[in-house]
Image 1: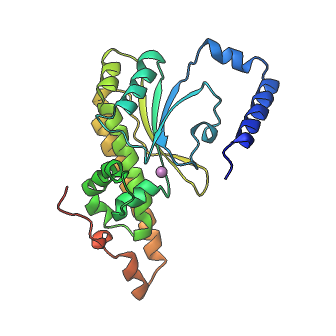
Image 2: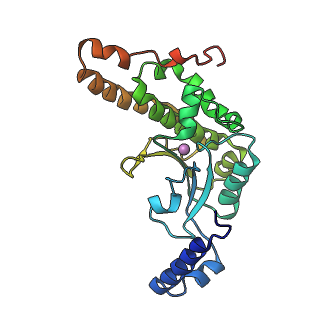
Image 3: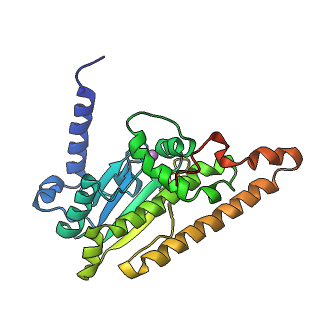
Length: 250
Ligand code: CO
């Protein structure tokens, strides 16, 4: 194994030269200030590179990423990013972005032990347990992304409930919280319809987003079941938590 990462350093030199060639003065311009309009809170997954997905340049997107895009009320790291973004940079939008086929969500759904990270993923398990009755109505193949989407909506609500965001709204500063879901299979972002421009709208937006998610998955379920017949139907309808999920630990 090489101890040097020369190929990455070489790529960096090439990238810097190309960027400067395309827009002369690009880097010296960034020195003066960063004025991003958006804070992206996404998964650490290497397949979900924030800036690239929305085609934004350095300086245009403030980014925080962790396993399974979780926003914990006492996570000083995430809270500090939100505070810096809203108080100092005055971003106009905070977007929580989950993605399909998320390893953290799969582990949470199926109670897979992965190590220390179990304690972090526990927050996604809490989301699963809050919504397990609904999740259990879905075909197994739909459950991972359904939980991933639920997780985005719940974490977006957590963003709204931070003291930082509550204070931002209280002083009349414009800030909208959003929840999106990225499809690894097609490269597309979906708006999960949790769009919160102030404290008063939070509960309504949350309920609306959950209702919209339920409706979309009901359509999907119908089309999956419509294409099946007879005994084939049974496995798709198998209870989701037959794998021994801790039902009682809600
Ligand atoms: Co992920």
